Amino acid sequence: MIDEIAAISDDAPARIADATTLAELRAVEAELTGRKGSLTLLKRGLGALGADDRRAAGAALNAAIGTVEAAIAARRDALERADLADVVARERLDLGEVPTTPRRGTVHLVTQTWDRLVDVFVGMGFVVAEGPEVETDWYNFEALNIPSGHPARGMWDTFYVDLGEPETVLLRTHTSPVQIRVMTDQAPPIYAVMPGRVYRRDTADASHMPVFHQIEGLVVDRGISFADLAGTLEAFTSAYFGGSIHSRLRPSYFPFTEPSAEYDINCVFCEGTGCRTCQHTGWLELGGCGMVHPTVLRNVGLDPEEWSGFAFGFGLDRLALMRHGVDDIRELYTGDVRFLEQFPS
Ligand code: PHE
Image (cartoon, rainbow, N blue to C red):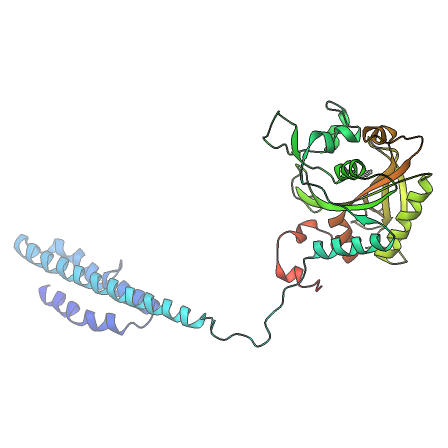
């Protein structure tokens, strides 16, 4: 048995060294110390030997197995390292080689939309105003005729800021508080649009994000009627979407407008024939609008007998999606360049 052990351990180093891949090494390992390997089989033969021979052969065998296992481990280490070096060499990126025409970024689709909308409204004679994203309860709710405890508060899932008395400071849930700021800051006549970021406690899905954008509109002047609202929105619709898309107003409720309406446009996906995105209605809902409520005018010190006006608030992200035929708002916020670079500015 000692001779057999010696014979195997003599040529083991060469066989191990000859293995040039991890798979080959695994085969050699199986042949030597695997379940049916030559050294393993010898071990099983030990029981047939006399006590003295068994002790001597056992010791020699253990030593041989130890040496072989160590040699295999060392070889495996070397082969693995070579493999890694190979991968690194293959995936090497030459950062020294700067392309002669560097790739240029583009303005984000939301920003492009913001700019376009402002362009359209400025073209119609509006000015642009902005307000803070962290608001007080007064601007976001109270002044807009939404008293605390009023069920209408439930229309906006609010993020409150841990500042001052509980529920007095919040992330604005819409751009309507900017209406109050504009009316407080300047005397009518007012023709203003107010784009901005808004926040709601919503779970992200194809049509909702907890952070999104709106564009608010406000007109306050003498003798403003619902017809002015409808006409302005129809003019905006063809300016922004092109002549084949029209608007309609559907009765609705907002505490700060009376009467109130939802602003819909012809579905840009199916052009009115009915599809999944418009839920087979042929119309897409883009926001709310209405005649400024007399209580809101009084809240900012304006006499509703002298002044009247209209307001609207549209989902800016939704306008972007509809104009470009995209059906998932999350596309705007995942930052995937393959999506974004389809909208070169
Ligand atoms: N602020 C309303 C909303 O976010 C939209 C709206 C604005 C409705 C102005 C009427 C007038 O739901």
